[in-house]
Image 1 (cartoon, rainbow, N blue to C red):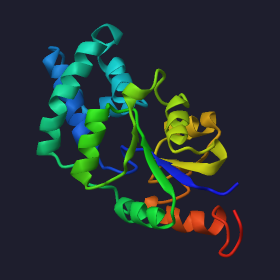
Image 2: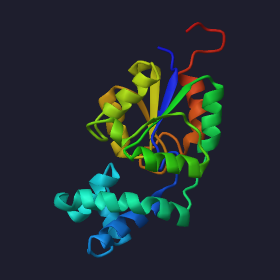
Image 3: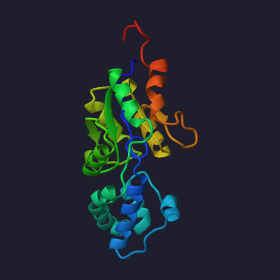
Image 4: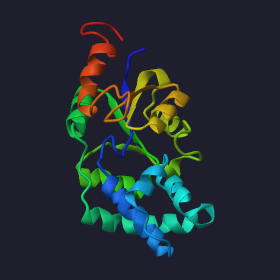
Length: 211
């Protein structure tokens, strides 16, 4: 089956948002009257989504209040700590689009926060599946199923790229070929910059072939 689309994770794959994320986690805890968590504590309690991380930090009973505080601080944190595109991300998007591939983003973030991050990073990807669009968050496959459905493609016609083991599990659950990018152990690519060439060499039909 010819690859016709690429779905991309957001945080750590397209955008370097770690500083903004940590700032919002700390602010949320402080707003609830709790100690500001250290970087080490945040690292040990990091989960697939911002809400899941907050549950590990503050407990389920306080999770909704913490999430509201996180969201309220997000624009302020982004203004104070820019979230640039990840190395190679902008170039990869341009090259993938030039190959005629449909592009989409699948993230566990809220739509508002995801849109802010993409705008801040100067990245333009029209299709965005966010937290509000699914009932089950990452690593459940629902977000990827929705994204490829909106692209009008089957699981065999898309690939997914992300930077964490949660992304790999999500892709596997969705039955979509998944590439781990970045510095994680076992990563197939150092950055998204290598994805267009990889797809051209191994997945897209050879020049002059049908499909």
